[in-house]
Amino acid sequence: MATKQSSAEKRHRQSEERRLRNKAVKSAVRTSVKKFVTAVQKKDTVEAEASFKEMIKKLDSAAQKGIINKKAAARKKSRMQILLNNSKSA
Image (cartoon, rainbow, N blue to C red; front, side, top):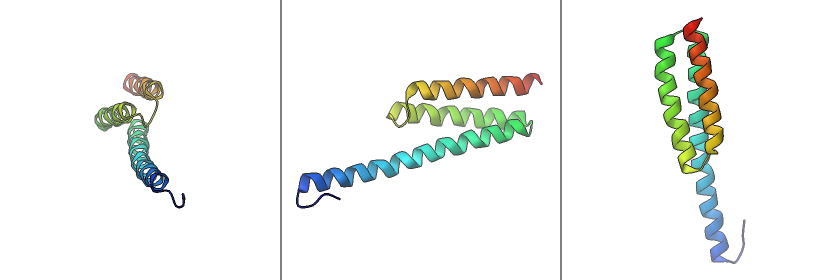
């Protein structure tokens, strides 16, 4: 931690708050992805579609806030959409 400089202490405090907030959002995204994948593996299409919508919402929100890269979010959404489509046709 920074010592004897109030501006450095403030920056440290702010970065710690941001880190915790970002960590929570990333965790929520990962949880929603796992929930979706589990639903697809169980072949529960109703649950898969509901969790897919929730996952898309969380990914878009995280990308908009700059927590994850917007192209990474788009790539993840695309791959999960393919997974959903394959589970419907199979």
